[in-house]
Amino acid sequence: MDSQIVSHTGGCHCGRVRWKVHALSSLVAWNCNCSDCYMRCNTRFIVPSERFELLGDSAEFLTPYTFGTHTAKHTFCKVCGITSFYTPRSNPDGVAVTFRCVDLGTLTHVEIKQYDGKNWESSYSQTGIALCSKGVD
Image 1 (cartoon, rainbow, N blue to C red):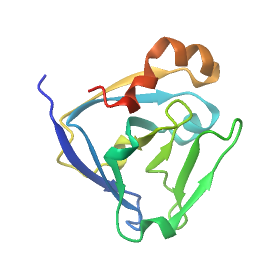
Image 2: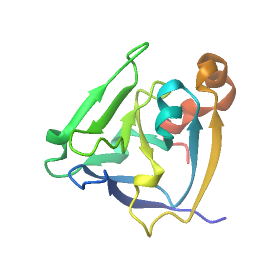
Image 3: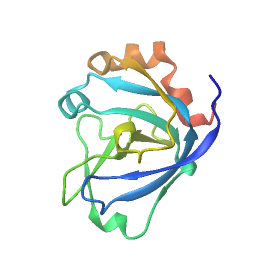
Image 4: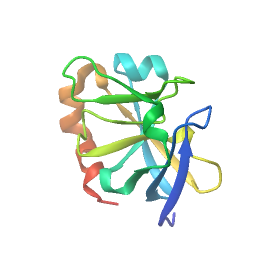
């Protein structure tokens, strides 16, 4: 399957948080079963932080949430509550983008892989997820 890096746009439900991300048109998204991702049903792809840009006045509508090691910085919209992106524990040098928050038209294929967040350390070493924020496409 051919895939190229394209500009995706997206954001939260109410539209106050908007962003642009440069990622493959066909990509791998991670479905995690940690307590937070499981409850939110968050499936995301990860990019290097320099490929992500928050647009306009979006920052004023964001609120952070952390727990456990406080490495992951979960950001959600103060108005609608949607987490359209965050800084993941697995990739603190990257951004995890909720693939369902990408505007229609630029994603051609999404392969979903499982990440065992309940057994975080073993999953981290076995999955190769750390490479996602290194720009290895």
